[in-house]
Image (cartoon, rainbow, N blue to C red; front, side, top):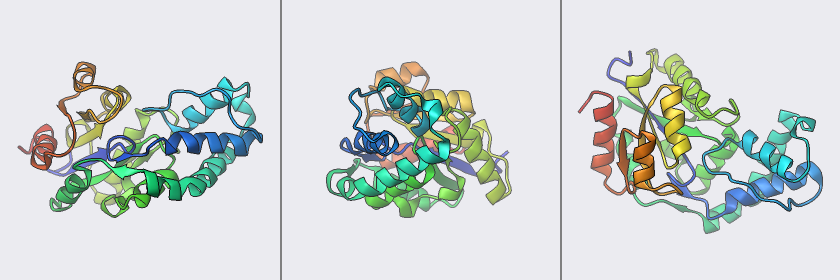
Length: 237
């Protein structure tokens, strides 16, 4: 058990930040680095891991993903992120209430907050740094798209890392994931965490609730309510 300690995992895109289309541009740029040409066909990206997205993008544009080593794809994604970093700073934004919620969590020493994101680790960190949110996150205990292509498995990575760092076991009751898509909710449910949905992405509050979210908010502006929901789900109401 977590001995009263909570592992809080935030999704990044459309939960904490609005990337204003820069994420899709990063994938397109990575595709160019891999193939030498721009992609003609586009794909869905929300709630998916980076390697899944790049694989789907390659496949949709007539390329065999198996022909590209994971390290090569990683390098292409990192390079593309660096090239689009200033665009994200200019065009992206912090979603309403996100900074306040992250700040409030820091006041509770029993809540350890990190991210559970489909982004590979360096890109997830870069996105939050571009918009000034990286200071709130313990990146040593997160789950990232660079860990596994299967999003639910990222929960276990985060739990193990947090457990090793803090010397306690984080399991279902002491792990809470906050995200904006049905894929976030499924990642929590299938990965061993409780789920809070925030309807700031493509999925409505009703859709997130139907998917099985334990609590749902329209956005993060009610800081006290969000933190109270985290504590309640972890048995610390």
